[in-house]
Image 1: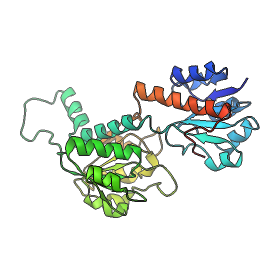
Image 2 (image 1 turned 180 degrees about the vertical axis):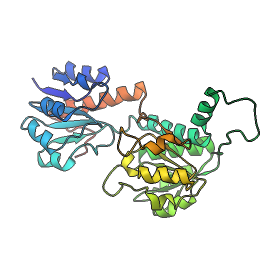
Image 3 (image 1 turned 45 degrees about the vertical axis):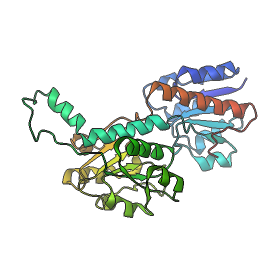
Length: 323
C-alpha cells in the first residue's frame, strides 16, 4: 500500500480523495495550529511515497534523503514553493507540484480588500469607534484617500496580479501600470494598461503598488529603503505575495517617517513574527496570511494537491508540475 504523509491537517475532501484510491494516509494532527517540526517531518517522510506539504514546512535535502527510495512527489498546498529545496528534489528525482489557479480569485479579492481598508482607514476607524471616541460627525474626521481613477502599479503580472488589475479597472476605473519580465499586449488592450520596463520607473508613477512576484533570490527585499523613497509620499504599498520581498524594518521606518502614506500586508518577512514597530502603526493594515482563506478555495487547494499525488502514484504526469 502506498503511503501519503500529510504534514498538517487540510480540508477532508482532499484526504478522502487519497483514501478512496486505497492509499495509506498519515496526517500530522499534532500540527493543527502550528507549523510542523523538523522531527515530525523527518519521522513522517520515512517510507512515504508522497508528501503533501504546507507552505510553513521547510522541506530540505535532509528530509528528502530520509524519504528515499520511496518518495516520488512532494505536493505543495500553495502556489509558491519557496519552502522547498527544488534543486534537492531534482537531484533525487522527486517531483514537486503546487496548486495554482484555484486561489487566484480569493487572493485577488483579499488584495483589493486590503487596498480599500488602508486607503479608507477602516481598521483605524473601527478602533476609534469601539474606543468610544466617536462623538459627532466632523468634516475632517479620519479622512481617507480616493481610489477611483488613481494609478495602480502591479509588480508581477501573473494570474493574481492580472485579477487584481481586473477588479481595479472594471470596478474603480483605475489606471493600470505594470512591470514584468516581458510585456503582455493582450492585457494592455483589455485593461488599457501601460507596461513599465523596470520597478524603479514604475514606483514614482503610482498611487498604489501591489506586489505579486514569487520569492526568489532576485526578489528578496525587492522593496527596500531605496525603492520606498522612490514612491510618492501619498502612495500605498500592498503585499499578498511573500513577506521577504519587502524589507519590513525599512517599511516600518518609511511609514513612521511619512516616506509613504500607508501599507497593507498579508505576509511578513519573518512569519509568523511581525515587526513590532509595524504592529503599532495606524497606517499599516495587517492580516495573518489569510488571503486564500475561504472555505471554497482551501477545499479546492486540497483537491488539487491530492489530484497531483494521485497522478504521480498512478504513473501519470501531474498537471501542476513545478519540476
